[in-house]
Image 1 (cartoon, protein in one colour):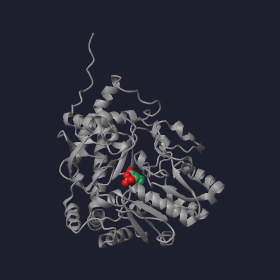
Image 2 (cartoon, helix red, strand yellow; image 1 turned 180 degrees about the vertical axis):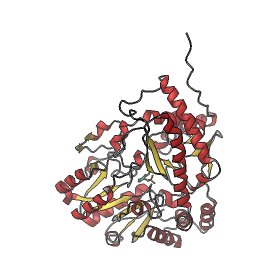
Image 3 (cartoon, rainbow, N blue to C red; image 1 turned 90 degrees about the horizontal axis):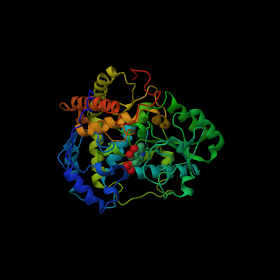
Image 4 (cartoon, rainbow, N blue to C red; image 1 turned 60 degrees about the vertical axis):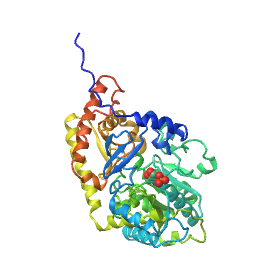
Length: 466
Ligand SMILES: Cc1ncc(COP(=O)(O)O)c(C=O)c1O
């Protein structure tokens, strides 16, 4: 009997140092890491260094980095323009719990680049920024409830961890009556009860909700694209309709621009979609990886600070973060870094198309070329629940194969690929395309041999989407 060819072998990564580090770290850090999102069991990556668009683990394996630290590293790892400036400024001392000119300049740049933010304050993380923005909204409106969309991630404070990312969509409740799903234990019911989950891109449901409960609702917080599901885009007119609806009901609109800010456009997703929210949160790209973050908004709303609302933080506006924000935002303002990033993303998508189209596999690119995903489906996804109907097993198999071949997207099929300015250099993009192509072939071959589940019924019916 003829034997069928075995699935194409996947190159083996060196893992000795990482396996040892994992065992050692497990003795001290829960899961061997400082964040649940990095705890990948025995595949946990221990990083040595990064430069530009590349990253090396402690075993010396080299990858094109497509995670870029979940988005902050917008220029590239070890960017000398930013690092030299931060080094120079930090020699004057980093933490005084006094205010430095760096903070003033950084926040002036946020105002200038957004064009609508009147007042803004620094925090250390995106989590803090969304927490404070919610508090400001509650204080300004005198209402307690916050509406958030299913599948949207706003950090790890108690108010944010509702209906974020279950694998099983039935946990989110009936599509017409979503339930509050706390992510993990330890979130008091009293806190969870102040959050009302809604479905992204469903403006009619939002109107019904506002009509029923509008006088309890302080704000709606929205990631302008669904960053936690490969950047699913708003339907045409969705943001405009939501802006109009919030104004009609006196509800504040908070744009969580932690992923999109200073990336989609100099003025972030608000500029990109032509929206003026009331409040916005920023982090990630504003500091090229240094822990810089901020929340801000229009004058009247922010005027509850400093007298009526608590906000502070020993490290808020620390010199390192403020200097990083000054330099990064100046580069974004004065150079064509963003244009380069957008063009590089488009170039990568074009290359991926040439690989995917001949295969006849339905797929769509989600998000913006600077932060995009690939979903294997023949229908445009419009909300978090749609991810479940994509062929994410195929995506996962490709991602694992890419990792083994020297490119590192997030292994979770919900996280977009992040482009940085340095990805434009050399043959980086060609490398990713070729690695993707080999990984796709290997994944399809492995599926043909039953290595992972069959394609979902319906999802692969019509070739050539995308
Ligand atoms: C949209 C959004 N908001 C908030 C956060 C939380 O930011 P941080 O991880 O800096 O606390 C994130 C982090 O990924 C995010 O993507």
